[in-house]
Image (cartoon, rainbow, N blue to C red; front, top):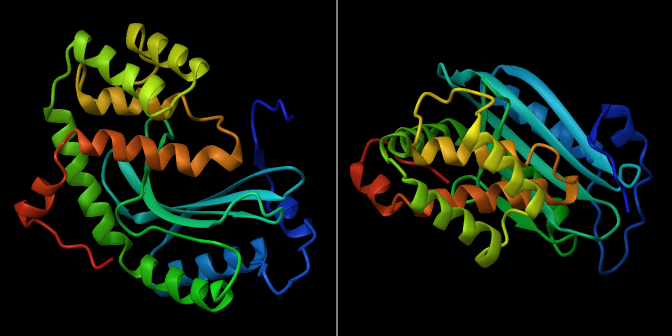
Length: 251
């Protein structure tokens, strides 16, 4: 079992990983193709790339790519587009849209807007290029929805009792966080590393949670963040976001 404290890697690690052979039941998608598709779609949608980050495990058999967009941003966060891929058949291809928090570099990943998962079989090789292109086109709308969620989370105060209940559910019921992450969140509650501009709010607790996930194994990173986002968004009664009519997402 790997015991790295960081899985951040250079792009060359992903490009050098040997692509497995295609079979009747397995259709691989190369990391290189995902990188090219994502970057071309970002530029094609008129977005400006701020940074690209990659993480990997098992010598590139499992990989994540994350891309921040500088012209879809506000003073606190920036649009981020990400994918997860594997060569060892350990997981499906995943693609999602989220945000990167500027003050702490935490990631927020939505599984409700602009996301898909696809097993490495069937029409995945034809489906993936079209899906990535279309989802990236809608990414600015997704960012607007996540801004609304952030603002509403900031307005929602959480008591110590509510905080304990939420953490207990994430740890015991939903198993979104592990004991090591629970300890990190406890430390952050006692002495925050960053000021998220809304002390004692649901937003602050959400950021403490994603902060605890910074060194997730690449195979768990996207699912953990999507699960965390869904958990906190559900506390807002998400249907109200759509009823507000402030934005509409074409996803």
